[in-house]
Image 1 (cartoon, rainbow, N blue to C red):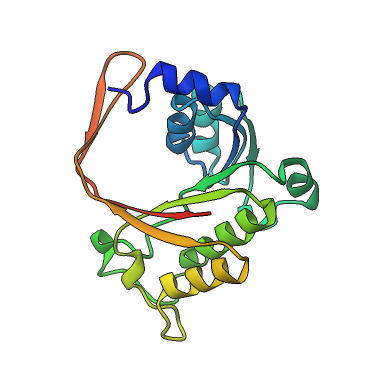
Image 2: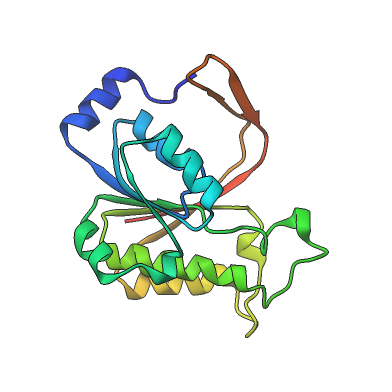
Length: 192
């Protein structure tokens, strides 16, 4: 089951909407954008295996293997002004499934801010960040909710933050007619 009709995707393609995927993983968010007719022009992923999988499945985008926090000014100049920036920064520090190991000073929690910094520098019309639903409940080492810090960062950049939690059963058909289902809730930031 595709969430966007081919007719809708065709209309979007005619508008030439482009996106950048930060913390791209194996390309799930990029694939969804592609299905919606949006061209992903660049992806950034630190994990070699995930980047390799991304390249095999979504060969149109240029994949930068490295840390989002270490992107060069040339990357930002090349992609500044894309309409959409998406990404799924690491969730392990926020996840309730790892609550016994969750710590306020988990360095991975800072990746949310590296994502937002990079996204803001790209100056898109829309930023979409996917993470686990527990993220809004986690405090940073100074005792402030991570979500409040993220929202304040977006407001300072003159972006309007919207927080959405999606919890429905998700079912996606793959190209080989197999189907992937998940009942995992997803937390998503959407800004404009």
